Length: 311
Image (tube, rainbow, N blue to C red; front, side):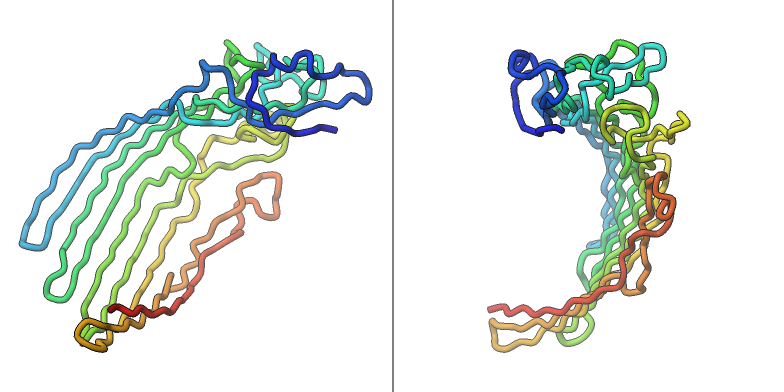
């Protein structure tokens, strides 16, 4: 059995504080201790943009910007550093065998580090018509790419000098949550005697997502890291699955009633996803055939009502 505790000291500080591997010995696990200084730095982001703006009429303008940022030293959690790896295959040696562990007296040891990386590239455009003649509206479109990588696995307090097998962690590529296209239209119409109609329509390309097999198929000691290696040794491509596209329309009706020169009462009705498009999410775990790539959750039409008193 194991006892989970939080500490911030280095593993070497407890070398005389733990028992041997005798039968019946308490085996300690350690959660998210802070790694050595060379792996913990202040996160930083480099960001820049370039663009143009152009006004066509007194109330209408367009805007286009190319935005880029790159993040380094991002916080990450290495799920288990108490693992050794085979330099020939890059796969872990069985965690169940204590002799394979860098710290045989310990169980699972997870560590905080700041070795994550990310990069965003996006073209963000908009056409805006400011309020005049009782209406306003805008169209926003974004074309973007989002990349990242998690921390390469550790063995003890150091990263292996040889290549780790694909499917464990540390690969650079398109991120989960990467979305190629995003379009938003919204507008407001001052209809008649205080009645205001406003709405929003959102269309989004399917968000990139990760498919996992689930469980510990390679002897890491936990269902951890990216879980992309199947029991037969094949590797699920990283974040290669595109989730279903999203499409919804929201509507608001707002009636303003004046109750004096400086007081008013507003009655508000909102309908979200008025056309009741389900916008499904799907199961992403290959080890659960009943749900894998099947619809598991969706968003449906909802309504809310409210009021506001201004004075």
